[in-house]
Structure formats: structure tokens, C-alpha cells
Length: 296
Image 1 (cartoon, rainbow, N blue to C red):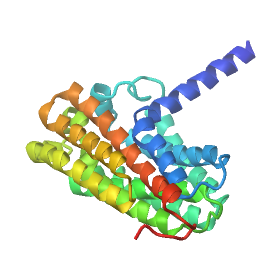
Image 2 (tube, helix red, strand yellow; image 1 turned 45 degrees about the vertical axis):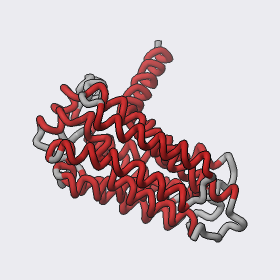
Image 3 (tube, helix red, strand yellow; image 1 turned 180 degrees about the vertical axis):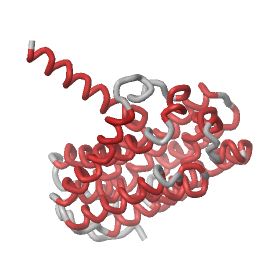
Image 4 (tube, rainbow, N blue to C red; image 1 turned 90 degrees about the vertical axis):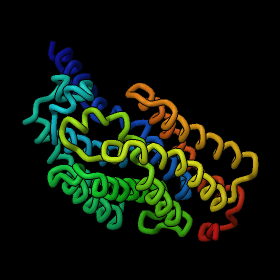
């Protein structure tokens, strides 16, 4: 009987943790892991689980904090999340939130001082975004999210590499480019959440400037794709395919509107962003002649 209770408790914990990051597996966990392996360069394949765990734990810290901000929104917008689904109460979620912060710091400190510093900055950004309500206005939301993602990528890249205290020029260029691109396109993910955001008074680009936000996606994705294929010296066939796909995704946001269409478009955007994360690896494989060389 004790074994059964233990097994049921374990399954419940796994279910809670999965629900916390369910929506970010395709949008953050997988793309950032791909990026780290492509940009590092990957020292050994056995580093991949460590990369994924580092990203997952920090992502869990952010999501637990974020989903404590307004559980009522999740009740109507994302009812599968642990609190509205009744899998965990607010008190226990709050305890978990503040236990995860030192857990992330301890994990990073076990790698290097640089990773520990990244964890400290990430924890500070999480507080600014959630507890200090930086998520409520599009400018602070986009800036904090882009900085957070770049630190996820930087941390994952360091874990993937042979030297956890050094980041190579190629990886640094890739992180900076990713941050700028994400800052200017992350509102793609806000279209599907517009209804819930409107309920709590959040001012995202799709709410404040719906037409302009969609047009910016239609124009921005192909333009960024052209820039990336030039930067990473992608061959002509792959470049055409990448730009064509970006154009298709951008056109979807303009031509097909509504909650269901926006959810699908967001998934396609996530795939585009994942493909963009592979490009530094392409350059390193076909054009890099040394670990410190640069595409410039």
C-alpha cells in the first residue's frame, strides 16, 4: 500500500511539473537546447541532458512564478495549468516558486561562476517580470522576455561547451542576434493569448495595435530570414526554402485570424525560430575552420 501511495504521489508530481512547462516545450525548451548544441560548439553528446535540465529548471522557476501572478486568467485561458486544474494550490505553488530559485543557483554554481551569475540575473529578471509586473506593458514585456531568452541561450551554450567559463565569438554573435530577433518577433506568441491578456488589462502589441502587429510579422519574418541566411552563409537552396517558409508563416498571421488560427500560426512561428537556431551550427560545420573564427 505504501508503494502504491508513493507511486501515485510521484505521478502527481510529474504531472504538475509537466503542466507547468507544457506550453513552453516547443517554444523554449527544444529551440534553446538546439541553439546551445549548434552554437557552443557541443563538446560531447553527453552534455545534451545537462543542457536540457539546466534550461528546464530555470524555465520551471519562471513559469511557477508567472502562473502565480493571476491564476484567474489561466482558469479561462489555460485551464490545463496546475493551479486552475486543481493539481496544486497557491500556497504550495508559492513555496515551490521560492525553493526553485536557490535550486537553480546551486545547479549553476556546480558548473562555474559564470553560470551562477547568469542564474542570479535570470532570477532578478523573473522578479521584474512577474512580482513587479513588467509583463503588463508590451515594451517592458518584450525587453525582459528577450533578455531572459538570451540568458537561457547563453547558459545552455556554456553547459554544452567544454569550458563552462568561456563563450566563443560565434556563440556570442548567435546569442545577440537571437535576442534582437526574438525582441522584435515575440509578439507572435501574444496573438493566441489576446483574449486572456485583455481580461487582466495586459497591454500587448496585438491588443494595442492589432493590424500593425500582424503586418510587422508578415514583413519581419522574411527580412530576418534573409539577414540570417546572409550572416551564416547558408547555401542558395536552403536560403530560398527558409525565406519562403518565413513568408508563409508571416502571411498566415495576416490572412488567417482568430484564436484557433493564431495558435497554429504560433506553432509554425516556433518551428521557424527553431530552424533559425540551427543556422550557427550550419555555419560552424560548413564554414568554420576553428573554434574562434567568426562569420564576419
